[in-house]
Image 1 (cartoon, rainbow, N blue to C red):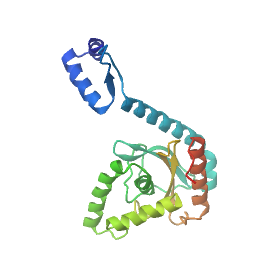
Image 2: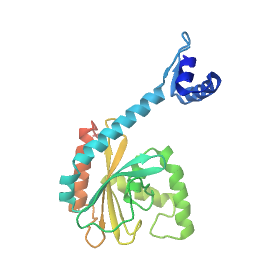
Image 3: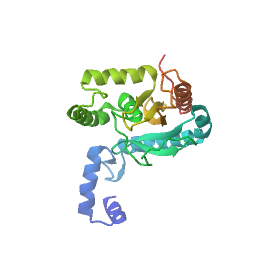
Image 4: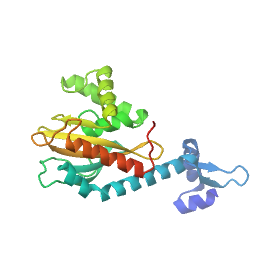
Amino acid sequence: MLRDLAGAAHMSPAKAHRYLVSFQRLGLVVQDATTTRYDLGPAALRLGLASLSRIHAVRLARERMGPLMLQVGHTLALAVWGNHGPTIVHWEESPRAVTVNLRLGDVMPLLTSATGRCFAAYFSPAAVTPRLDEEMAIAQHSGRMDLPQSPEALAAVLAEVRAHALARVKNTLLPGVAGLCAPVFDFEGHLVLGLVAMGSVASMDTAWDSPAAIALCRAAQQLSQDLGHRPCA
């Protein structure tokens, strides 16, 4: 009941009601027309399922980082979509890691990082488009010719990512650093995390068929299968 929710939230019934009206509009709560009681709505259910799926995916991925690093030979990271974009949530440094000023919780740019390009190619267009537009405008203003300068050029870059199920960059995010990112999908085909490899451009082969790229893609595909993903034939 409204009075119970207001009491639990330590606020007046009038204030609690204003919140509940907003939550109903968002689908986070529903109200029974007969009893007037409130319950969690469909949006809350979707949010909870998405969170569970993400946590499950990260846990499974973390368990496989050690063996994968032996195959890839470079620093590995995991990224999920956060409030502001692709966010690093786990990091394991290779013994021969290059020095990078990245930390857990850092948000990766969509245009200049392999992680960002992976999410730009596969994540919800409604989420990525505003950020892509901002970064494209900055790239055009700065005159960086190593980045896409038009919607057509950007579309070609993202099409290449989808064709190889892998994003790659060299010297675009940080000088002397190369990156790869492979997408991991859940049982509904939604991108839940990016599996990232990062190393020096002098030692990391970023060819589509390089050992590091193949190992990263295979690991991402296996993790996706274990999460229930079945790619379309």
